[in-house]
Image 1 (cartoon, rainbow, N blue to C red):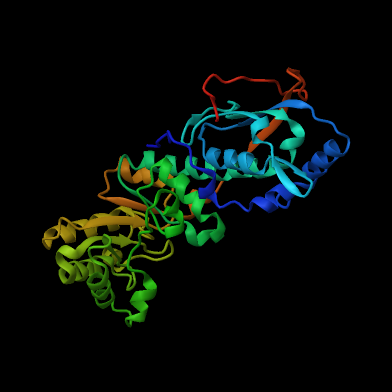
Image 2: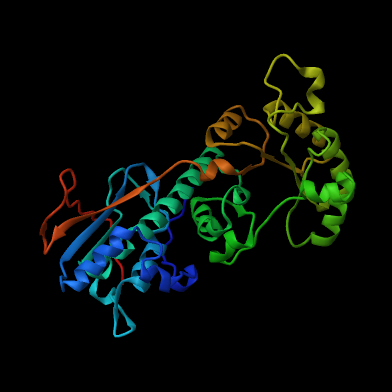
Length: 363
């Protein structure tokens, strides 16, 4: 379940490259030319800009968009930047708000020359963060209250981690994998004993897990990948026996092209590759029979909202899901239109002023 954020994030938290945004470095050139032309001709039209998107979605990035307007609207006067924020009237929804197709999420009213150069930047922020929020919300709902670990950092550019992690957090993800992703709410990244460390210990999962637990137990929940030898049941039991109460969970991550050894004698009646329901059931049964019912099972590897729904509908004993690349796929684009000029309708055909009583005035 997503959570509406009642207090807006302060502009400083975003560490915006303010000078470059003001200069139009990240903006479509035609918006920069528009600002220059309006300033050169002394033209200061009072407009109302209206922003919307076309999906049933969650709104992300709105505080970042507001921060861009607060810090980067204005003009260069006698070599010093003159802020335009006090000349704007901005109304917006909140982070994590559910939004309908074509619902107005933000309006900006004021001298267009003060903020014409910012459209590319604030729309891009809204598009990216809302995409992450919507995708995470879908898997959180599919998991029916079970924890979702947000693990797509390795699938995208590192620069997107901070804001994406915040969006995932607001949308209901219980944990993220990097400190950058957790930074906006003061958290820390979480993770599992990785394949690389197991390889560094000669392929000995128990040795790597034991060393990791001895060093980090008490700082994090110790979770161990158990597919290094493609024998998840046996490896999970060995790790559970060795770590005892230090072990929080085991993570199943079998490749979609492999069949785990535990299933070799059961082929023929189900799709055996990857992390499938039968593999989860066998690991759970083995742990319970060996006296380790407290050890949780984290399932990862190609999980989507639909796949999680299938597991949950079938009652598969997964305790948490690690979800990666599917959470950054898709699109959730936003559009901005001038809809009022000097208080009167002035919009391109097909667009019109659509006031939203849910919007709040931004101080």
